[in-house]
Amino acid sequence: MVAKKKKVKVQLVKGMKDILPDEQLYWNIIREKVENFARNYGFSRIDTPIVEFTNLFKRTVGEDTDVVSKEMYSFVSQGGDKLSLRPENTASVVRSYIEHGMLNLPQPVKLFYIGPQFRHDNPQAGRYRQFWQFGFEAIGDDDPVIDAQMIAISYFILKDLGLDIEIQVNSVGDSISRTEYIKVLKKYYQDKKKSLCKDCSLRLNKNTLRLLDCKNKKCQELSEETPQMVDHLSEDSKEHFMAVLEYLDELDIKYSLNPKIVRGLDYYTRTAWEIFECSSKDGKLNALGGGGRYDNLVDMLGGRETPAIGFAIGVERVIMKMQEAKVELDKGKKFDIYIAQLGIEARKKAMHLFEELRLAGFSVTENMSKKGLRDQLEMANKKGAVFTLIMGQKEIADETILIRDMESGVQEIVDYKKIKSEIRKRLDKNITKNLKLKK
Ligand code: HAM
Image (cartoon, rainbow, N blue to C red):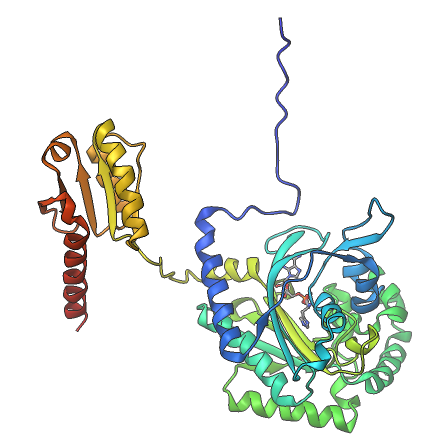
């Protein structure tokens, strides 16, 4: 006798998420929106691998950032390479820009992406270990109008998706003004060290700017009185920032200045911003996206000095907010034709007809495994079919087919050989009727 095998339950890995068919409508709408914006603003798609050398992220995102020091999925490959799943996409895009000599193309090189990122963070609402970002990067120009346009893209995409958005913007200065500012900050915190949370007392020397956006209540109180970066900007950085704000005013973008926007990744210079849905702008967790300039990154990775700017937005968070805001979705195209069949012979013929109509360009659907007419008509209704074609034994014998108008319920017998022209005629009539109704 064969021993009965114990069933082992399979389950999702912690922090990961299935994207089920019901949610795909949101994903399609977001993808389409991102692609349309990219086309209008002249961005080309780039897809970089999910796996990169760990060093790439250490050198760019920063060894002392939470993302690299605590949250990377890193491993040694069978060949002994130290690799990581990408925690973000900017470093890879810049690597690719350098490696493929894109600095010889007309600048700025404008690239966009949409893909999964990996961070071994504590999962909670809107925070996953595998999450998707779409992002835009413009490499090779430091005109403030590009900063304003990038902020505008991030703002208008989300507004177009039905969300009420506010941008919070800051300047983290160029490397010289930032070094000066960090000295001032360290001095400010020196006698307050004991009141800082454990993370911040470690960050004080290595990643001082992050003290400004710590979520710990005591640290937040301490950061209320900190000297502000804007008062320590170099003339150049100040001028740049003022020009960016002027363009934002011109575009009527809803923004506020937030001196605590320092971003969690090391590579930022000058303009930095985060994107909030208005109902949750005070809850840090819910930033829908963020970005900034990274004027030193190409240089840091071995390319020539090249200014750049970009942003990324978390897709799952955007969908969560769209669901909370009950954004109405355009359910998309319905079907023109549903094919219903009764009996084996009719089913065989219906299968041919389905392929024939599909190849002729009709939007056609079916449920061949269903047997009863009621069931099939119900499905046709659910799928929003305009007409249902019904075929049974009698129709096969007479070489006819029934066309049922799903709205009126009226059924007509037509010659099977003329099926395509009969459908076209009716669909055209339907379009004219709908146009008249709209007027
Ligand atoms: P980031 O602020 O680290 O920036 O991430 C951008 C967005 O990704 C966040 O605002 C959030 O919506 C989403 N996100 C981050 N972590 C998670 C998570 N664990 N679960 C769900 N969503 C998450 C960057 O990644 C930069 N590369 C952006 C950039 C592009 N800067 C310049 N160019």
